[in-house]
Image (cartoon, rainbow, N blue to C red; front, side):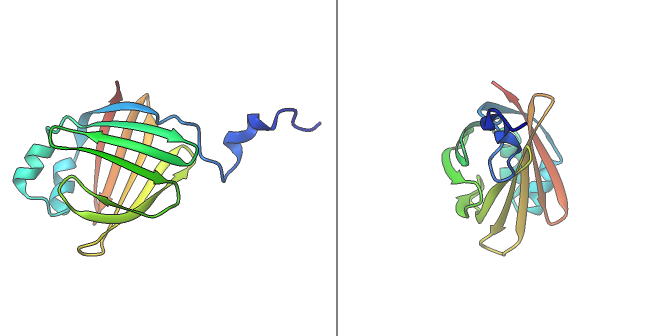
Length: 151
C-alpha cells in the first residue's frame, strides 16, 4: 500500500527543514555559565555585566529553509536573514565579526561560526526543551546556555 498523502511525510525527509517550531518571540529568562563564556570570548567585564541584564528578545520567523530573526535588547536591535546551509557574516553584540552558517539537525538548529579576528570557532545550538528555547554556546572549551521563554 503506497502513501496516500505524500505531504504527511514532509518532516521525515532528511533534506527538508523541520517544522517551524522556533517561530515566535522569545525573551531571555536565565543564563548558565554565560559570564565565563563571555570572558573566554575576550569580552571585558563592563560589557559582560551589561550583557547579563540585556533584556534580550529574539523573534524568529522561519519559512522553509529561510529564517528572519530580530534581536532586540536594551543596547541594540538587529535584523538577521539567513538560509540554512548558506554562509553569512554576522556581528555579535560586542562587535566581534564572525562568518558561518546554521544547519538543521533533526529538531535542532546548529550554528558554526569562525571569528574573523582570530579564526577560532564558536558553535551554538537552538533547541526546544519543555516549551523553552535553549541556546547553547561553546567557545574554546567553555560551554554556556541562555534559556528563553515564549512571549
